[in-house]
Image (cartoon, rainbow, N blue to C red; front, side, top):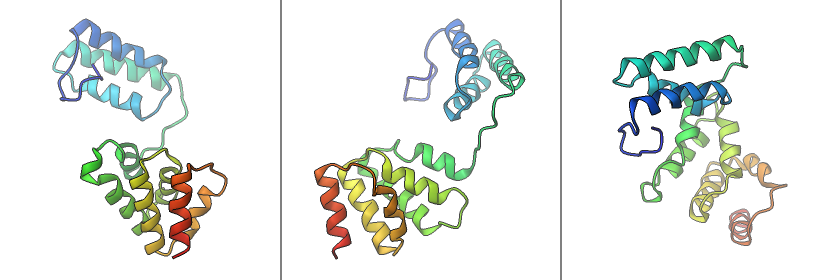
Length: 159
């Protein structure tokens, strides 16, 4: 049910119900929440009921609350676009330009630490240097970078 990328549900109603019910055993995170929401939006009422039962059970487990903010959703989907859209770069620039938004600084640091394409990494570094927010580069101090990324960082800092 969650593997298709065309927005359509996959599998029989019974399979969709079971997938929603299986979410009870998952960590309470954004992926689990998305699965429950997808179940709640299903066209079949019994799938929606199973999703609600799952949500009720998760609530009864008294799991640690999940922090959900616009920035956490932005960060979650940041790298889900094709490279040609340059969406990750636009989103990264937005975060760097809006460090006063709660969670933006942490999202910037986590983005720098991700295994991203060299082109994105280079653009991220350029954005930080242009914005004169070099403090974000401290997140890279202890990270073992590839030769290419280390060279990108070195070149940016020597400009």
